[in-house]
Image (cartoon, rainbow over all chains, first blue to last red; front, side):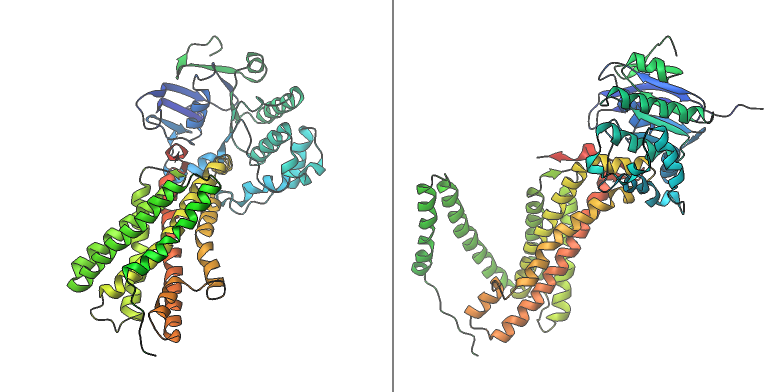
Length: 228
Length: 266
């Protein structure tokens, strides 16, 4: 039986500085399959976040291609691709209202059709994060950095993606919140072997804890890594 | 009522111009440092209006459609440039978007007015009507366009994280940009709505005042002003919606990406 194509694949991916000739990323070949937790590592300015944004389709690319389950992603397919492969920013975006308002936003999008907000599922996720149901009523303006990141993570996880792309999600969190986020992501991925995670990190200890494989970047190109 | 007005001599205009000295004295006594700007502003007011007077006199006398069209095109281009210059955030193509929106909205509204409301005017492009009409619509529409453009840039700039989060969750570009677009259109249209609320109560509009001074019957002056207010309102609405949607299409590409790098602060 032929093996299933990778979930996400980048072929000779390149991105330039907007409006300039200099490459931010050059000739990147990368793939991730279900069951993997891939860490993108590298020094500050090596292009980790640029790569993750390009993989998520948030930024235009100037060379190469990105395949989702072996297929190129047409313009019309982009929202559906992003429904399955969700990108999370380093600093979460929180909308006005309560935590619940923030979670319901995902269901206001056309791509989710007639799906409804699943409160039971969200409460389970909150429990994993060490929060109870009352957290849903908390004002978004009063959330700490850690709580905001947990809210953003639950907002993504409730959508049942196949791939999570996390851009240093614990960079500005206290150690307890960082551990909670790490554990939630690992638990989520391990609950279903078809799921995968790409995690940008500059913390070697964290990479050891969360990743099953590493992809090292240096000045926008691939650097050989011992765990590759 | 007979249409009569008091002709002003150059001396009488000079009396009025002397009032600018008050502004100069305020600036000097409070050390505002505005004297030079005031002088240049006063000088420009005189020179620009005198030149416009000469041009209008000639255009009114010549009465050729292509001359009228050329003058209107120049007025439109100046308004389009002025609208963009009032905005804090710009992007490649913003001048073209401004020109297209202001041209489409103001010319359509002016043509509508000349061909329907003022259909007794012959020829329909009579510069005595066409040029002041377009001028008033342009002046207000450029305000709406400037406000709308500015607000869209500011909204997208300050909400970039939220826009990208919606896109990350599978939003289409329209779903992600809808709120900034709505806010921008709202901002562009509010001034004209406010004007309509207070017109005649707080102030008499310039055109109506001019007609009254020129001896036009107040009933007729009011009718003209009502027509103008509605023309301005629809021109502003069309221009604002036009420029905001054109900007949206430049800043969000068909791959549902927000091209934030295109936005440049002046």
